[in-house]
Length: 414
Ligand SMILES: Cc1cc2nc3c(=O)[nH]c(=O)nc-3n(C[C@H](O)[C@H](O)[C@H](O)COP(=O)(O)OP(=O)(O)OC[C@H]3O[C@@H](n4cnc5c(N)ncnc54)[C@H](O)[C@@H]3O)c2cc1C
Image (cartoon, rainbow, N blue to C red; front, side):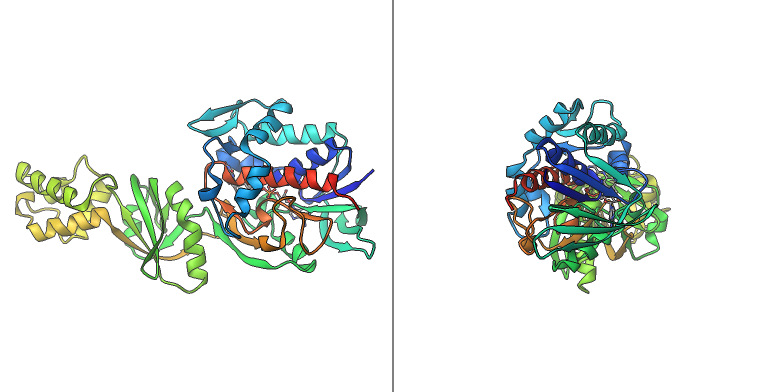
């Protein structure tokens, strides 16, 4: 019976374990936390957005070699993944394409995977920290780990590295997988926080803290537009957050790491051109000249935001709106459409949902997830230099790579 050792009992490791066990392999999962699947419990605000029916692999994944993610996702598709969960007795529900377990409980996803893996006879060993993966001259492996009972060495025909990234290390993904892969000859693209809050310069953010506003964030690297996204922006005392900010944050992380100038523009009225906003403001001034500056934007923006936009355009909050000169209205339209923010950092790995960077995918075969450097070694999930956007893309990446690695390792001829 083929022996497969999986390092890491997270989303991709459990998917790999179930797939390989179904193909008759003897599967051992080594997980250093007290239980497998801890990160799954935190996903989707505890509801687990496990995939996306409108997933577009060409635009939803970044990093790595172009086409790598598309190739993997054509091997194990969203439909196959849904069938995988359905088979294990986990019904799902769809909210505008975002797929959740029917019970809306992330724990149901983790429990289902664990129950199925155990039912198939996979050994799930918890509290076991893998320190080294060694390949023998005959191609077989020895996995060296520390367990509560002392050091253990586990022989394997194939090893699947499913250790995740450095994001949210409290869930177990402490980055130790990068060292394991590197020791086997793999190149690591420096991991950086992604899908993360962004820190901006300026006291103005303290004034704006707590505001949520529909808008667009545009991110510039050395003055060139690198990414943009729309949705609910959250303004905080340190800078900006919210899904659209998460979506562009990996470009900020990379830009800052490369020493580039990273700036953002916040567009608080993205569905109108600046000229339309200006006409609107002129008409409003002529219709409501008796209002004070402070009252001028009432009903358009949250009060705190309106006051900041007015002040940064040089408009008095106490004078009548009828006295606002055209040039200041032009400045106000400019502030509404492109409120500037200089980005000085991102929140740390502790706050990040994922990492960008990781094991270079040039060294991995997208048809099998097998290492091109170490035959019999497979790599999955976030450990790799591929990062997905919000909306179920990262878990889908974990399921697809895990299932593909489990299937390929089980079918590998020695
Ligand atoms: C707060 C939060 C919310 C998220 N929400 C979503 C969402 O709704 N939808 C979505 O698609 N994605 C979401 N993600 C991202 C998603 O959870 C991850 O991309 C996915 O879990 C990665 O799977 P993985 O198998 O690569 O790694 P992980 O799930 O992190 O699993 C890696 C496992 O390996 C273990 N391990 C690591 N090193 C060792 C070692 N040396 N020895 C033994 N064990 C080891 C870890 O303890 C861990 O259990 C979210 C992430 C966070 C943090």
